[in-house]
Image (tube, rainbow, N blue to C red; front, side, top):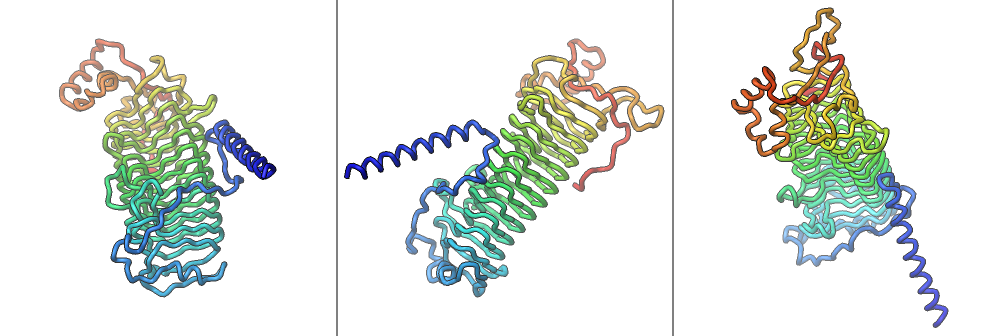
Length: 454
């Protein structure tokens, strides 16, 4: 017995050492954490088992889909007869399941509808519905825990979470339609979640009336040609590096795209519209670095771009070029500005406030950020030599704007006649020193064509 106890103690000690060691190394890696080569670990809380009597009566009498999965051989193609089947379903072997948009799997409002614990599989043309509503167990329409899978043309509705990928790499997630349960925005589940999942392609999906599409600790993923409506975050990146977001359309969400503690990343040729409300923001940065934001149309948002301590890494930049900021409350808002932002060839039109700062360490910001070749619809200069470049630099000063910037409660009166009169008098005969916000040495005189279709 003594050797066995000694061996057991040694095993426990080794496990603890590895656990703490992995934890510290993960912390040291920070946003660069990459779990692609790590062994697959059980990161889910145990899924509860529910009796048929505990599930909604609409699934009573339905054939269980699990029976078809159990009979299918690994690597085979399963084409179930059209109809509605009872969930839940757990797939532990490679399979190709073709539903042809005629197969519904309903879990009766309990637990997770389908779990894919295999790689090199395909799920196509299925309707998954009726998950539970527990955030503790991440009740969802589909959990994917394998690699190199295709999840295509899945209709997921009446589920807390939609598609949940954890430690799953190189998957193709295409053409799916995802809706959450009819709950308040904050208590819905995420429509699509990537967690420690790298090199996935997410394209042509529709995520509507969900909470967020998130990528946490997930690198080098591509989000392309997706539609997001009436959710909270269209995409929320956290500790997620070098992701690409292109040709998406995001409407009526609280926030379009948000980068938090990230490095790298490209956002190009997207339309982000009507991100309104108290936190309405087209694109946001929080201690992010190295991003490229180009050729996007950001319109009718509370704030076009909001930046807080970004770029964060020393000697890094954030490049914003060829974007159109139109009809926003604020075109670009910098909070706790540290410089390193390069704004080139952008269009600023119809914004109530073009650019402003929530906080800076000094009054002369022009050496910190670069403004060059942007079009400003409030530019008051001329182009006498007809080279499409203004003869004089475009200087943007803050006059009465300082009132509502320093006292946010005054923002309610921002466009009131009194504020307009004060601003006019301040510009006519300044009774305080105006704050220089930016200087564009070569402003465009003629507005370029639109960079995207709105």
